[in-house]
Image (cartoon, rainbow, N blue to C red; front, side):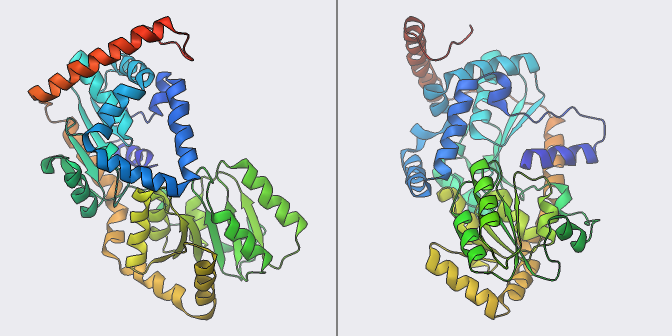
Length: 408
């Protein structure tokens, strides 16, 4: 989503001047097996936040050994091989990546074929990342906050290679909605006279949010509920079955993956969500106080802390805490107070111009000369040693019947 927001901003600021392709890199390059592993692991992590948090800590503790350049060489050779070939054929003038593995493949391609382009990473974890983002050999890692900058520097990223620019969101979140509240809610068979709660667990629809939706529906919660299930078909079917089998005074709309989140948030008074980066800032720009029920890992916990510390949202770690927050919302004016806090927050005020700022930065870098950096001797030595290990692995792979074949 940040990449698409920046693409739109470049096209709006510089119409017709640049070809901009936003790609799902591993899949586009044909690294289907590695793509499946990477995405499958993320789905697994979303369902096990406690384990993933501990893995987060472990990644940081190993430092150099768990940076993306090393991890890619050791574990994702299909993506490295096919991604390098893809870039060689594409010949980009600049690479702007919103995933650490993609930045690494772009770097490897540049090194192998001496290609003259710059590589920038955008760390999509706004407050606290993880060690895979650290990459001193690219031009810079762009982060959303000063907290994220200090985190990366602590992990070993050179200070002059960390740039702070606010988090980019799609421009539709800042445009005036043309449809009325009555039209949007009426289309969902909801009651415009009631307040509305929106529940989401991100694009994958994995997490604890659904359990709270069921609880609120069964208890005749006096709001409309919009449940966005993302790509989780099982959850979509489960909530629809609940709606058809249980008689409740709570109007409930069950949706799958949506592209009008800006409209849904426009008519919402309260949200329940996972602490993902895009979701966090989308609810903030729409001034919707949010109960965060979970986060995928430690790097998303920072988003929740940002909202809680600034009294713009809550963190319910269990059912008891969730019920207490709901009681406070129903019996006090805390929703109004939290909405005012969002409206006054200085960082939230920077978000409307975030995507254009990054767009101007990219174009400026594109139009300035690329200066090749010489690798330090230690880095070159490590590359030779790792290259020998990879060559040995490839020889063994040709002998054994592996699950995928790499064209060479």
